Amino acid sequence: MEPTELIAQGAFEEAYLLALQEGGGDALTTAARAASFLATYQLEDHAEQLSWLERAVAAAEQAVTEDPVSAAAHFELARAVGLRDQLRGFPGNLEAATRLRRELERTLELDPDHPDALAALGKWHLELVERGVAFLYGARRDRVLPLLARAVEIDPERVGLRVEYADALLRLDEEEEARAQLQIALSLSAEEAADRYERARAEAMLQGLP
Image 1 (spheres, rainbow, N blue to C red):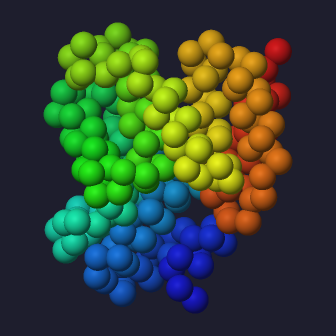
Image 2 (cartoon, helix red, strand yellow):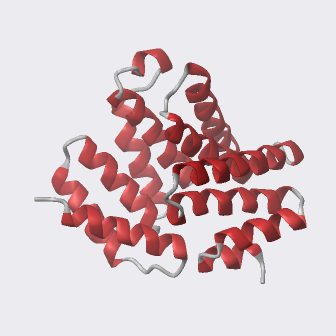
């Protein structure tokens, strides 16, 4: 079975190990994604999550080294760095936040319609605005929702993108639109493991609304 098939089934650790064994830029990118998914969806222990995110960062860094013009590799590096730094208390320092933005913007230079990078960049702006340090990093509140809306427009059937959009809307006090996005998320098919985890997240968010 291919690593991507294992990821679709939710066998993230197995996918990581197999992809790492295969080697090469694409396989390392897949390994990074598998490790990030494992830390995000299946682990609860902080130390274990951080350990797997370090592995994700290492695999993605190697993937970028082997294929510097791979948008997928740059995005997986951004994802892994962002998740790791959130566990460490994002944005812990200027260098970490700047690196995350740099990787996301590099992804979009290579693939302007990369929906995950657009959504992640929107959340990057939101995190820094909420923490009151937007002026230090060049983050802007008015860029949050347009970036996430564009991501959803490009890939409207992706459950996770709808959930991320809804999360941003809630944090910006757009409750009714957030509810609508969550309802759409729950109406979408969830064929892959990540989609099923995101559907569960959408259900919990919807139940938490008044």
